[in-house]
Amino acid sequence: MSDRIDQIIEKLHQLKEIRQQLVNAPISEPGVWIHQYEVRKQYKKGGEIYWYVYAKWQANEPIFKRNPKARLKGIVKRGNNPEYTCHQHIGRVGSSTGLGTDPLVTEAYREWENRKQLDAVDKALEQI
View 1 (cartoon, helix red, strand yellow):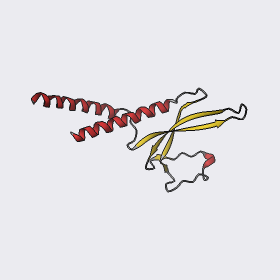
View 2 (cartoon, rainbow, N blue to C red):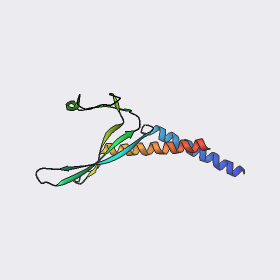
View 3 (tube, rainbow, N blue to C red):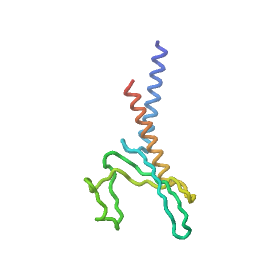
View 4 (cartoon, rainbow, N blue to C red):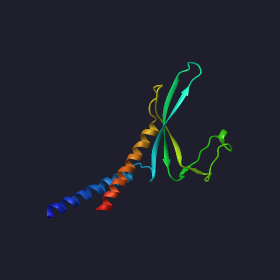
């Protein structure tokens, strides 16, 4: 029985170290996730249709600061919260034109993965 307790204590120390590494790493806000969406565009010259996949941060509550383009100020309907929105554009994930993933998207996925791991570690510690 003593060996089993020692193993549990060792696992708890490992979880503590992992949690500390995650807290110190870049991490996304709690309660947010990444949503991918596709945009299709037809160019006039060739008439070909190209697709682009973009990523954006998404949340249930408006937590992202609005940053409207100058040409859209006053035109865009802002709903209940004129200062904050529930989503924020990150960048391009890929396209049929050969354009690759934006570095910001790669970093965002890393931050989101860190958040999911931290939440899992916290949940495991709560259950113990």
